[in-house]
Amino acid sequence: MGSEPNGSPTVKRTCWRLVDILSGMLDADERQAVRGDVAESGESIVRATGDVLGLIVRRQIGLWTEWQPWLALLGVACLAGLSLSRIAFRFNVDLGQQLMAYYTYGVHFGTLLTRQQDMAWLLCLAIALFLWSWTCGFVLGSLSGRAVWLTWSLFYLMVLDSALVRLVLSGNVILRAQPFDGSHIAAQPCDLFVLAFSSLGSVHGSAATGATVACRIRPGVGHHHFHDTCNVDGRLV
Amino acid sequence: MLGEFEYLILSAATRLREGAYGAAIRQEIEEATRRGCSIGALYTTLDRLETKGLIKTWMGDPTPQRGGRPKRMVRVTANGIRAASDFYLAVRRVSRGVLWEVNRMALRP
Image (cartoon, rainbow over all chains, first blue to last red; front, side, top):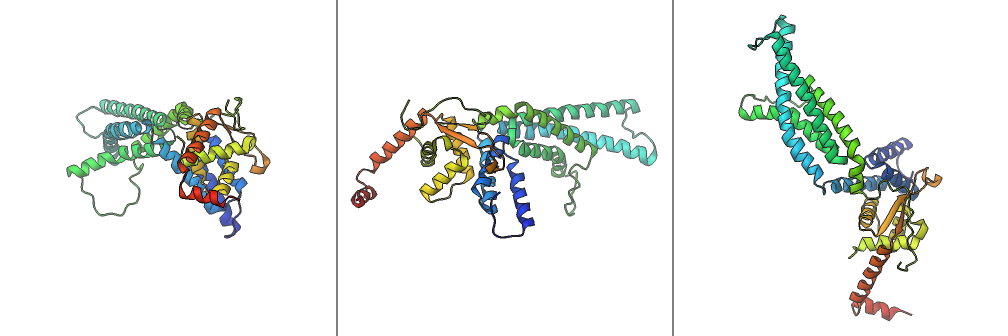
């Protein structure tokens, strides 16, 4: 790629690697064209990084001029995420109680239900969680296009934390001043469940509609050949 | 009506003819305006022009000079030429009698 007068070869290699990674956020065709342009122009690493970052930011902002990512954010990440967080929270609590009682005392935790009924209840919650996670992920992926990384992250945070926030706000849980260790992210089996299935759904959703979204936003996507003849000599045809 | 940057791209692409692609258009604009031209601005404006039907773009064949990466080729359509021509005429009309136009005429050999 381009030249860079300062810095050791390792640093330069790392910086160019960073530019390559950044350009991975662009569509495949555009990524190749941009990398080629950067290589051909021989610009400095700073300018190359700025150029690639600038294009990524413009592309991401461009995505939000459509209504679909907003629907994904408000409808799925916020509203559906809120409903899913209730199921996830219920599943976490019930499963946690049963596991703790079983491993600590070797007994079934008393819930006024029989052991079989409790297992059926947990199974139903797990199925609801699976279906709801996958569906939300699929819809997020379909609607968000390349903005899915943001809508999906917000969706996941909403599912993980909205139940906790509700409990804190209602006064049922009091948070002590403890340093943040990140353990609340995907700490429960159910959270990993949601993480896995909603990601799978979003990948399927993106794959199903990714090309359509890209074409809608970038008309040049997919135009590998040009057969139309146009006058470039200044004469109007 | 075109924007200034859109006009620059159309002019550069028309001048470059068959050799019009991202990096070449960028260099042409930088030389003409003596200002930097970011890849982000260039590519998003190319998309806008293509949406308006003023240019056509397609991915060219990979070349070894670019590390085996293809170019995004650009061709100005008839509508693009018409729009650029209208813009140029409008700029000329609106510039009649203004200071810099008068000075330019006076400086002409």
